[in-house]
Length: 390
Image (cartoon, rainbow, N blue to C red; front, side, top):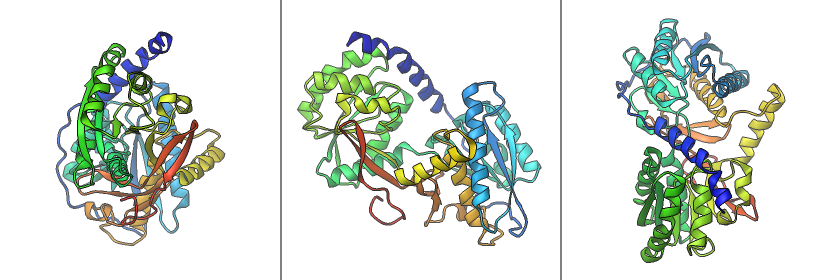
């Protein structure tokens, strides 16, 4: 066991750093109910702000894949012309703000990107006075609002989907187990919020210091709280790059059986695939985008570019698809906040999605279970809003 535990230290430290980076404070963009008018019969100028130019190899791959996904989406538009202008900002908020201002000065009517939360917030603040909206690739809801929308999958969306499903399955007494990080606290709040009005209740909460030893020290107390609270489900905020492997190993050893207590994850448990073989996650539930649609996009992207897409590359496709669908209607105000937040939403490469007035989003998700080290969808993703799954 100790060999396994020692290999987790770097992953825990790295994940803690990333979580902290995601949750740094943000200035509030100025709310804008308007948007620049456009000529729908001419190519619509769209700015794409990418994390390229930083020298970080991972950021360069992400930037390339986002651009490629946007190009695929543009090729799929029927009767709509997009004039895509690319700006590289690395991960710098200051450069992102500068690029956003330049893009608007160049005539951009809407901005796709940036990826990183602080950079997206800075871009939104920089152009708020122009009425130009920003469709960020971030999933950090703390920066959402005003003229900034987040396209990335959010904790709240995932928590809502899984808590409602758990309540319907008679697993509505939920204990939240979260790490002591900004991301862990955000996840806890999302789960607690999801319980309201869902038919589920929060039986209790337990937390742990975000370190290898912190997880080891907390496991017996977490197990004791599960027993005393009467919880029939545990909702973990931990991910596979952080504390999840340790928790899935140590809690069963401490007496919490995943046969009698439903394990639920706020993050994807199938990435990396090796996670699926862990005994502690067998029977566990997590949410994921429509697998059929996601596979279609991955296959098409790989065929076109000779490499699989980055996990968030599809967000660029979704952004272009939404813009194209609105422009096609021929309304000069197609890119206003009112148009972007239409209730019927849009069809994306990972399923249906819609933008909300508060700058967050709602996505159609499937519920999956790990069975015999395989991912099995036990509740399909909805294909429209208003049906099962929402």
